[in-house]
Amino acid sequence: MDKEQHIIQSWQLNAKNWISIIDSNAIESRKLVTNQAIIDAVCSAKPLSVLDIGCGEGWLAKELSGKKISLTGIDVIPELVEKAREKLSGDFYIASYTDIARGKINFSKLFDAVVVNFALIGKESTEDLLASLPRYLSAKGKLFIQTLHPYSRKSMNDYTTGWKQGSWDGLGDQFIQPYEWYFRTLEDWLQLLDRSGFGNIHITETLHPRSGQLLSVIFECGVK
Ligand SMILES: C[S@@+](CC[C@H](N)C(=O)[O-])C[C@H]1O[C@@H](n2cnc3c(N)ncnc32)[C@H](O)[C@@H]1O
Image (cartoon, rainbow, N blue to C red):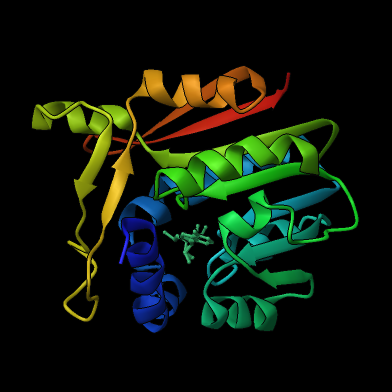
């Protein structure tokens, strides 16, 4: 099985665990910082319609729909999409990033914002997806990506773009089959966004409020 398939299989196996950990708000960095950071970033653009890609069990879609935004969500794991459908009314699709990139989903409208929150994990799937996204955005539409801050790897003396061994550390023993994920340096993220047709890139960094540890980066960009 290739690495991209392995990522999807792992999410399939851990879907129930993920739903329960998100429902219990048990991930400290999310609770303290990163959830609100992505909500604030997206809301600052005042979108009327948002496409949440890799939406998982739908917590972000639910938050945004409470702000009178029309929500569309998409994820490859049926169990997660089912959960999202239970949480809010919106259009939800079961599909992979490759399906989106190949134009297999007919969204029947353009979006004011596309958001991908901690959900870009693979290499080709991410590259293909990002290259396809300009066509789903309205004229002044914006893309928002939140991901692990690349500099958080600097202290590991392994600041090179490439596949890295992952883990479910800190989430509990019930999580199984960790997967390799594709790490990008900050420079490589910026180049990838540029190559994918995005410009005017604005960066927001989040920190743990007590330890000062770098947590995430949010890229906000428009179509070139
Ligand atoms: C860490 S979770 C984040 C979920 C959600 N965005 C959130 O903030 O809670 C990563 C999500 O990406 C989805 N995902 C990973 N690879 C995918 C792919 N190739 N196509 C579609 N969804 C994918 C997983 O199913 C999972 O729901």
